[in-house]
Length: 204
Image 1 (tube, rainbow, N blue to C red):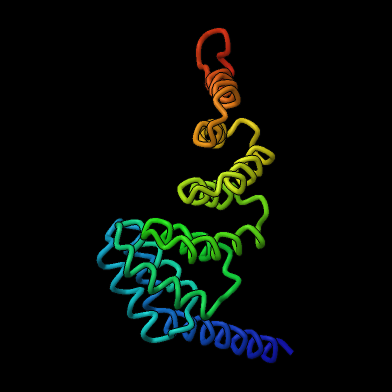
Image 2 (cartoon, rainbow, N blue to C red):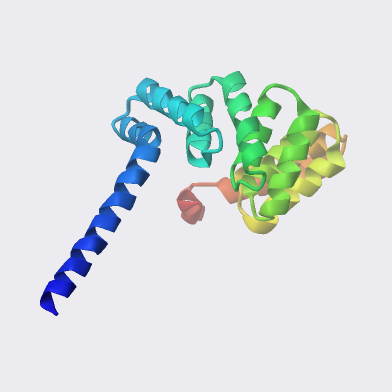
């Protein structure tokens, strides 16, 4: 009986080690990418994530990290290409739509940016950054009512968001609503006042 138990234990251990070894082998490039990313060696990390994607074009984890690293170092064009590949593989990725939409905004391709940012908001209606970025695009495009709607969505989630408060005042000013703009600027300064009188604002 004891011999049988020992054999079963050895078989289970062998199977676990085999599965673990297979996992490590199949994900060796991605794991090396994580290692180099952890020790702050971005070029080596990018190289390994690229190898991971070449080995498995549907490796969502490596695609996202590769795109993110390109984005963080300002290589927008390469980041866009990788994000597009990522969304082709994983259309409902929780971060890719916003990230790619933001990059298209930086490139001045507003139609593409708006479509992706709207998708990001549909996936997560409380995504403050997507609402704020949409508001910024609408403001730059002269679509002031839509901009106000997005900034107000931000304030519904974060009532003291200083960027949305300021941007609303700017939109009113561009619309020629001088009184409302001045009132909003006063409200902004009250909320962001970090003086002794309103010291609690310092912790926002």
